[in-house]
Image (tube, rainbow, N blue to C red; front, side):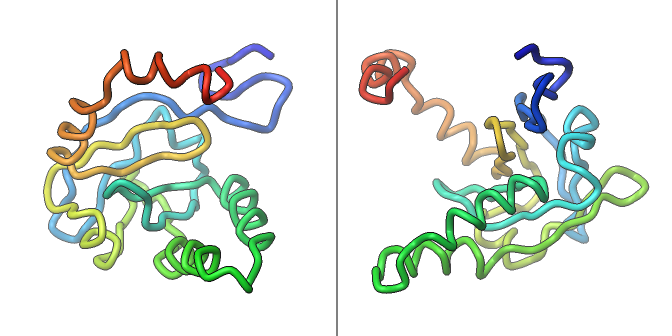
Length: 155
């Protein structure tokens, strides 16, 4: 498969990549980077993420994720908590004419988003980080440690 822009040719999948810094306005709106707008669509889902960020999924990727959540056993407490965590905060967002979308207050609080944010593409989803939290996380990512774990991850 050949990648054209962010779309992988011969596939319905997009590869969301890059790092973009934006300010959050007083109403809680942030600009969706122009390079990601087509891939995410006019409407997409934002929910609580892991490591202190928010996850954003295109509608197709959200359906894939939701399908996986539905397969988790109701009898397993960890599985129930996992589903609750992601679905309870999920909300549909829509890009306005200025290319912005509103992050609801409960999600801004969950990710400690106040003024400066970073949106990063991580393949099938976006992550939305408080700028300082992302910088701290990024500084603690060790290329040597990743290299040592690549075999364990099957890469």
